[in-house]
Length: 476
Image (cartoon, rainbow, N blue to C red; front, side, top):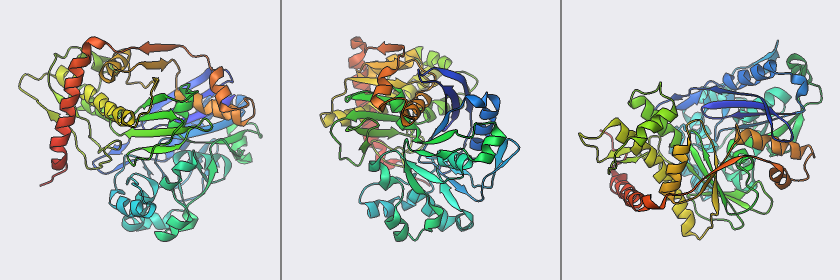
């Protein structure tokens, strides 16, 4: 079977998955990042520990191949070789810089000018330039900058690569010209390997210590969003995948590319198609913040939705930019706003406004795609712990779109396994692997009677942003 592991921002997941897409030994672990206005980081050892703890908990003889994905753009400054002792890894490393870290923002302009396109400060070169200029000791001690999946792949195989999921994404990493231009030490950066290629077998000593077979292959996975697309049964154009976790990604499969700096556009996992991507920074962040400020962190998300259901109709508006925003406004200095708050506003009203605000932000990305005459037949959803039937129906009502929710424990892990089996020649191609999947689904259709109310409220949402945009991040 395939051992698939996904290192998400707030959840780590692993499972053994057979060729029919059936999960065995599924396990998930929540992790907490260190977050303030500019810093978002986490101990790097958690990824090594999660991997070895999981392998030690299963019958490792069943593993045919290993494939990993991770959140991004996130990276780890590796300070030493990674050793296997007993049945666990150890090394010296800096903390993982997660994609929400903004310390590279002041270098975004320089990198964008070099590439003649907008490169957000969360991407690799701006973030690493910040380390070079402001954390010189860390930069000098770093032997390799590795993505999270690249870090664990290196531990397993002793081969250091960065996985590139599509040629159209290469400007968001590095190349020889950019490293020379910014005077960065090329020895600290890896070569690239294509998604789906075999990195190599698990290192012999690692296999011995973890009771893995000697011929277990490690396959290049890469960015988690890529595998959410595969695991959401996208087998043709005009399907949009809504990948909702700590952040939220809208990924449209299309036969025509889009040239618009507010979006990323690159090769789709399926041949001869494009993936058009808009990424929202705050969908999950906002709901976790809501639980914190209302002092209801002990409530699960279903109970938070119960609060929202009890809200009365009102004009309370929430701009969800708690951590800046990526698509469609690409403003790291954007801040959140709660507008039309009155003495009569209840916690139910606030909960409802926050949930609606994240969906209005989602709708704003949809509208831009529609303005370019892209056709969206249906929206496939990758489920997250924070979601529910209520949430999906509300999203359908606000956007006036049909949502299809497939029943799988993890679209990322499922997608990883499908690519791995394809790489091992057990499927002729990825499209065949996807079409072989048999998954139950729920379909959510918009309630037409609610359209006028949500249209008015969405117009107010946009007006609040237009009026407050120039005031955002004013400090005293």
